[in-house]
Length: 283
Ligand SMILES: [Zn+2]
Image (cartoon, rainbow, N blue to C red; front, side, top):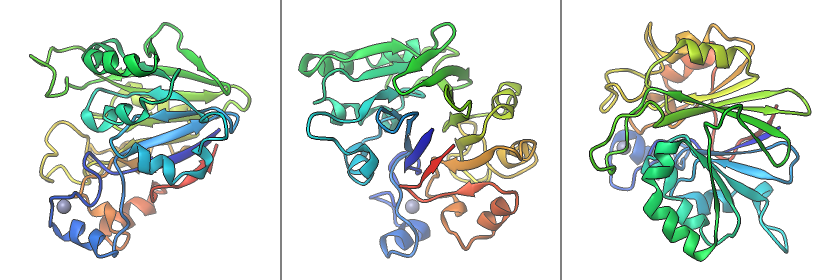
């Protein structure tokens, strides 16, 4: 299995266009690496690629990733696996819309929330829309077996009434049939759970929500499990030293964006990683 980290920032990317905080300024000055909104691509055979989420920057992200460039006849991108319905994860579907026959997997409430957008996309080029929570999981072209797992989360703010449903947010377990290697993709995690322990215990690599380093960061309350602290994800990941552990979805308030920060040193000491956009690796 090959994995490309197409984007590793939270919604809005890094720097955020309307923010002049010390880190966003440093990124504009070229002192910190620029990052696009979180997104990744996976393949089991180097021919059929699947996107994990579709942020609004997807055109630039695909342009920067030569493995995903189109050939003379068609794109190697076969479809998209959505973890939720947040705009930073679905807005890029409109960019992908010109391609016919893409298959998009998402949980039922996410598919329902996207109904208006789906109608517009299907009018140009029919897509296939599939339930990611289908019993027993599903198999992707290229030999990847996928199961989706709901984790606690709320409906996006644009959904009228924000109905509660335990399936608004999912994490993906992706296994390469040929090698047995496993990727767990969990860019939005509000709290650690025994489910995550079970998933990561069987994984060779986990790409995890690293939005906030500390619970005190602005906007950190409740939505994203912080990296640090006794109940943070770094402590939980330390129970799984066998897996490669990579943080993604970094907010501009996160000191991990700075390679010279004490926060980055603390994470690196445990063997967990913060990698630049465009990083490709094999499992
Ligand atoms: Zn900023």
